Image (cartoon, rainbow, N blue to C red; front, top):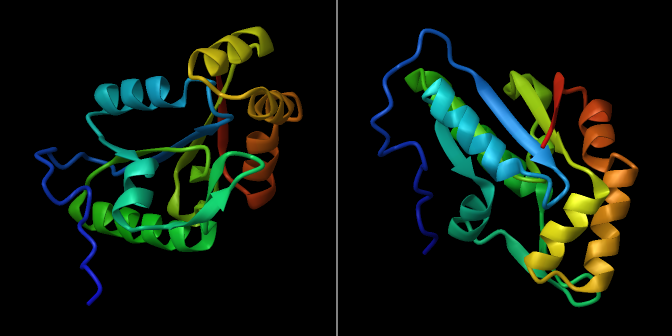
Length: 166
């Protein structure tokens, strides 16, 4: 029997805001997404959504890429679940801050603003080393930052983008 999906905004005590704003915060791992997302959520009195928790709760890991040492996530399924969460929040008049390097895969028509976090390559390398990332994963993430992968993908999809340097 499939477990019913529990909404991350169900138990919130947030007051309804005058305008519901859906913000996604994305960027290369280690660029400061979570710090920025939590600060925005606090400032806007919005509900913070950690996409890693959504992935875990909805069992969206489809496997493990041994070479990249990373979970394999079906971004289409993830996007569908995030859209459901967004629709529920809009109905309830609750603003959301959605935090993940995969968040920009949500369709732009569901999102008001896409915040992209960026940082210097030196800081990024230090943060990833501190987190215990292996050398190949650090290099992959540095390349993503150099080539602005999250920014380019978000732009290509059609998001309204604001870049924040951390």
